[in-house]
Length: 151
Image 1 (cartoon, rainbow, N blue to C red):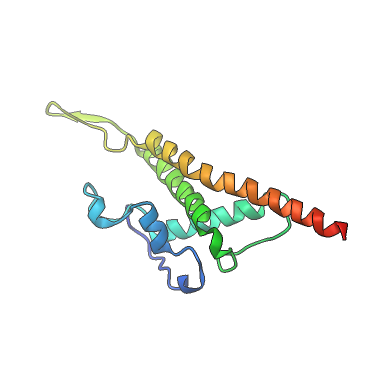
Image 2: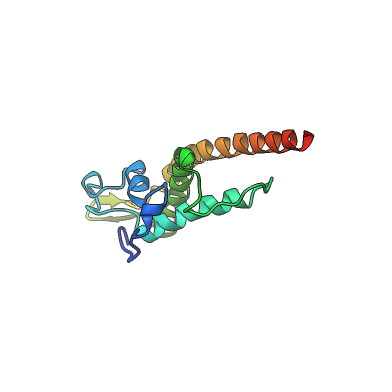
């Protein structure tokens, strides 16, 4: 499963948060993944994670603006990247939790899927950056909208 998927980020040139940038933020590169010797996240998974963050933003009041991957402001790429990383880490945590099966053979115990809790903690840390930004930005948008109505 790691690295599998046919999705290619061919249209990333118009998007501020590229799949490669998200992959490096997660440090999901083959040379760093010694145990699997592959990428952990498929391009499809990262594209979905990236879109989930936009969907979360668009579904959160106040509803002053709605973004797509192409229109999400480049100046906010860091919190977007953190939110997308949190989504990807949660996806992986669910996979690890679902597939965890400790086993022992010949006096050797192995539990190579015991990573869900660590991934959820990492996701929470990344999510905090995005959620703090979204809260602050929404307060700013509300204040600016109120200010503009005063004229």
